[in-house]
Image 1 (cartoon, helix red, strand yellow):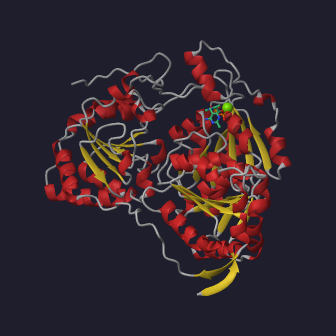
Image 2 (tube, rainbow, N blue to C red):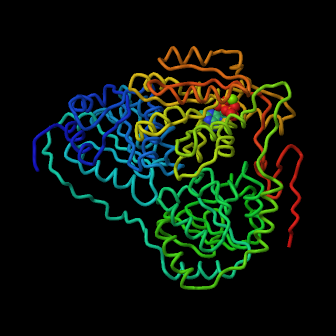
Image 3 (spheres, rainbow, N blue to C red):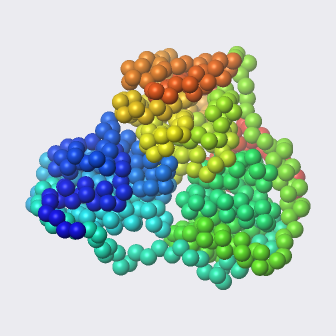
Length: 578
Ligand SMILES: Cc1ncc(C[n+]2csc(CCOP(=O)(O)OP(=O)(O)O)c2C)c(N)n1
Ligand SMILES: [Mg+2]
């Protein structure tokens, strides 16, 4: 197929051909040529957001709900720099998005032209790849390559920056196009010798742990993880990025590891003699002080990105490959090996930890609301079929701890970058990607004040998300550190949002949403049920909670996992030491 058209038309045509149905963005001078043909497209819906950061997080949410590549669009200069945070976020959490930005005309590049920013230079360290296109003829091929790179291997963000003259120039559009990526060949098939070696270690180990990370769901490998776990009887831990990749209700699940993980999960790593890491990256929030992490464990590390292997912790058995292929081969190898590990003593110790140090929380005698209780009731009433999208802070950790996840990918949050402001726009993208599914954003009063303007987008575009603002009046997570490590000197963490500045109910109403408030435990169920009944508008519930609630357990930053506390000054007793 060959046709004469502008670069901008070729861009829109290429987006249609690669299957894009939704683009989040804001127009401006340099990208304006692209918005003209977009106006006519019957296949691509453009969602006009209120801030480009919202476009980027919405694209991330859309990508995670659908498994497709999310797309955001912005103009040059400030439009593009407003995308930097979501691009970095997508990079840290391996989310496939393509960001398309307009750039000043090619003759003006490098002259400090109006609204010029070197966005490809700026995003070089936070994109999987990026392109600066100055020739209209290159646009279709670049789009195909960008989508291919974003979605294959370890997924991630790709930037396509297109100069205004390239968008305006006439070109010959041909389809299909041939990619020119000779150096890009992600390895997905694991090496069979490494798989056999892993199976041997599994049979010989006495205290193994399956450490599941975000890569498990990205590879759609939860069924295989379940099969391997049940075949071998090995306990499973799910990281912040893997919540739901193994059912919380499963007896072999020990919970989340890390700074706010369960005592059983953290303790299992420290006592393990074999860690099988699957699409996980030994993040510092999981390992604690690295030189004291899991001192007795051999490491099998499977990841699609070879750069992750042995980055933080030496891998005894490195396996480069797609998690689903790794698990499928590992299941076959364990069956072929035929031996079964003896983990009876291990389970006895772990079950003791699970029983003694189950997650719990403090209730307040004055009748104020405990935020953890809100999570428990959301979990009970809304159930495991919904998507839960969290902001960053204490509420995020409570959402990870106290909501029961049974299905992969149902907990979506900003793990690696920890981006306040993620929840509302990401929830919007999730809901647009999966309109039939209930979507709850669980946000902090601080986070919510960073990106709540996308409620306007939700209201106008008919995207009925539900937002639970966990309003503790504070930048709670920072306040928690001030409580514990800065002698309760609360420097600049009190937002006073419980004084209704702003009034989140009125704010919701101002944005065309329904606003509800809940201040007492006895009202929680009714307000959640009411929110669940409203499906023709976004709903915001202001849950006014006690400011002193804390996230436990906790491994203080820079300390060893062995120093975990399950409450203030309360260290677990490790009874089954060897
Ligand atoms: C953009 C950004 N700025 C600052 C921080 C540092 N930070 C981490 S958690 C937090 C507090 C979040 O407050 P809130 O949204 O009210 O959540 P809470 O911890 O109270 O539940 C802050 C300021 C961050 N993660 N992201
Ligand atoms: Mg708060």
